[in-house]
Image (cartoon, rainbow, N blue to C red; front, top):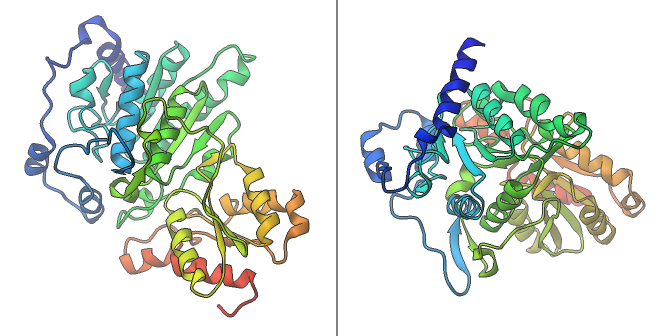
Length: 397
């Protein structure tokens, strides 16, 4: 406890004292290329993360027409735009400033906004998460980055008891606008303690909003919405998706672009079976839909985007059209995302339209293995989604 208190005092002094104010002309962060040249990349999982780092300059956003943008750059632009828009917004976390973020999501923000608003922290998740909650209760709008949400377990008391419950316990008088963001779920070769999907964990807590984007547009629009939202928001990113590129519309490149929290997106229309997922699992659903289409099976793909509040109406509407549904997520099968989808369908008018039981595709009931062969068997794949869809159609699978 003493170390946590000391960390808090250090961070408060640095982040909010007048002596900590710095202009962008006084801050000089090493370039990404210099850092990568000097820093050895140790383990398989870290190599998997760093292979997605673009060593060049951040991609420019088009001033006219669609542009191809990585999820990493979309998140970066969202934070930059919100920090420009509102001086109460600041970013805090491990390596977010001088190192430009563990995954380079905060690249360039220290140079632009200075070390009062882009704050490096010690390795003390409970300390800086508590500091962010306190700052939010004081009227600021912190973005708290966890290097991985697995590390947020050190801070779960601050997130839930100090953050999520305060608005209710204060009789609606004390909002807590804080956004907790970082990579969630499995990456590549980082084993059991760094691969867990927390969407169901946080989705079970009253007072939290839980967001899980897939594409670059999702990432930008939903992160901006989370930062502006007066509630505690859990923003679950995916390490493997950081380096994925998606087309971003001209509208999405505007500083005014925001996606409402709680609204799903139909990524592909269909009539025979509904595939619903979030984050990287949407990619497996889209790939499965392509394969099924070659067999004259029309699959509708729903990108849920928000875990809580869940867009149940979009799911119900789709099931009433297709009469079948497959949920896809990387969490454990027990008490998970797929279980909630099944319950919502069974408890709604969609139940009367079902021609087959709800199918769930989930992660395995086992701590994530380190061996790549076993890891590949522990999470959803395109082939498993295809077989689940065929099962709902009573076809050989």
